[in-house]
Image 1 (cartoon, rainbow, N blue to C red):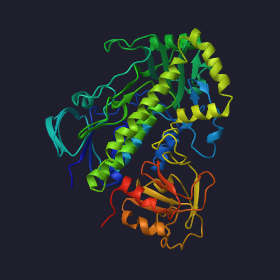
Image 2 (cartoon, rainbow, N blue to C red):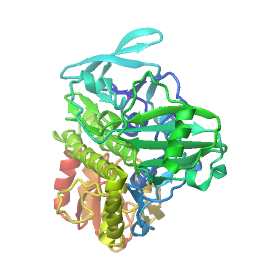
Image 3 (tube, rainbow, N blue to C red):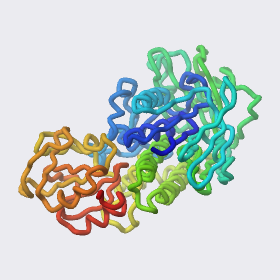
Image 4 (cartoon, one colour):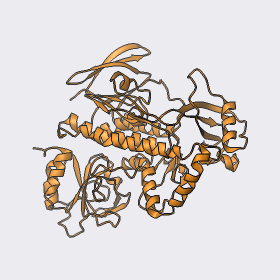
Length: 508
């Protein structure tokens, strides 16, 4: 067995990665510098469509659903989009405090064997050809750990990134925001203080219910730099900011906690330095708008998890791990650019007003609306060439599947975290001999495809279902992260090449 993967940072990206590695039986140690969770003091308050579907794809959404609430919808710079094109094909966005997500991910990761160490902080590391030696500080003193890889999931001020010498350039208009949990029921607020809105003075305001009697309030103002860390935010500052934005006084109610956030958009120069890799906010950071930031963190984790597992288990083709950077860094650059574009449509208000009016008109064109809808939900991410026909490179619709064993769904057949060969060619393509995954989808043996896939059965599951109108293909090969790696006929010989490319040589 190889040394465990060491993950510095116990936020959503680090915990999701630990869970993904656990699906493959890979040991991980998560170092979290905070000894206890700080009461959910995070600006994160929503899951966009792709983030919700990533969690559902692993069976993680059910554990947090009771803490979710319907979202107002999907927007681009607080210009609300028509979500009709996604109806019955994709999950809607959800409101969810990040603390609930972290608790669920932590619980699931620990159940899969993750060694979680709160109050343990990485202070240094060295690496060689076979692994990484990490120096850790805890209340009991300093010690060293040996790992196969080191993952920096320690946020925008990443120690791992800094020690690895990886640049973190970026720029955007100055902005400063406040996030706080206040003791008032969401329904008791005046209407102007409920929900998300673009503010006429040029700024953003949002509020969501956290629990009965508690509401999370977030403000954002521009042309204002973050003050130094020594300047603590106050409840009076929050009320004054809300009144400026909404032009109505905010109730003088107790504030449970409050903190500032903001700063420029940044993307790391590279996401890997030999045996050190970056995920989540360590690799990219930008204004948390439309759920793109948490979406990017989770996508990093599910993209890297199976590739790292393949490397450690010995089946990964030589270049597989390199595709983490070549796929995820462009996605981060695109998301940061999309966010900066949205901010540019917010301030300065007098200059952007006619532009917002024009964009509002353009949204009446279905193609424009759909383009921005996919951009804001993360559904635009594709790992195929730009001219590739759908669904190659993209995620499949979140739709039902009917197979020999009954009814299942696209997310349900991906719960195990393996690749999936989805045969949608119809009931006459060979005999049905097994129900395979036990989820209602079936495994048919005796077909050319099943015979071809047998040597990869430890990495790829075969699922048979009836043709689906929303999936324009007779057969697809899904990577463990849910993206389509190959499209064709079930007996297409080109399938073997795709299997070798993404899942390595066949088992001997």
